[in-house]
Amino acid sequence: MFVALAGFMLWSALQGLIHGTPSDAVPWWFPGLFAVVLIGIAALPLKAYIRVDDSTVVFGPNFLGRRTFDRRDVARIRGSSSPITNRTVFLRSDGSTLWSTAGVLWGRAGLQSLADYLGVPLDGAESIRSYWDFGRWS
Image (tube, rainbow, N blue to C red; front, side):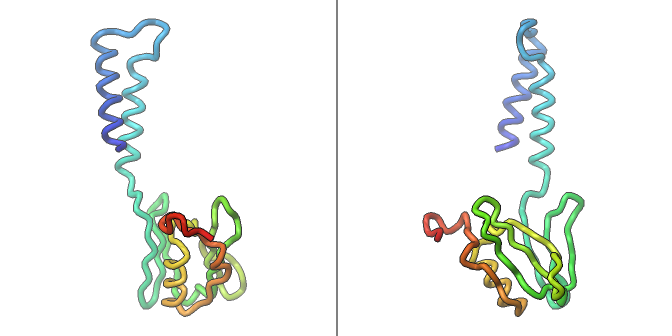
């Protein structure tokens, strides 16, 4: 979608460059700049993931790559009751936050499965909503 929109914006910029633009119109270079930004967004890795193995938990993507934690550091997963963000936090045994993520991205079933795999409790599971539940939100 971003690439198609960028293509249209590049075409528009090219038309403005070739035929000229009126003085009261948007300059021809603005759609070209917008197209470059859209292509940059399309090139970003937008697939979020949580990977767990025998020793580590990996959250990605992050702005600079990914975040890796020792699996033994996760003592509890807690879903928030915020209706907008549904932030889900991964907590250490001392109660400090190890990492937080949007609960709606993973859904109640996905986070429950992850908690079961890690062998930690999932608090506030009833408040976690999922975009994938399509009308079955509680």
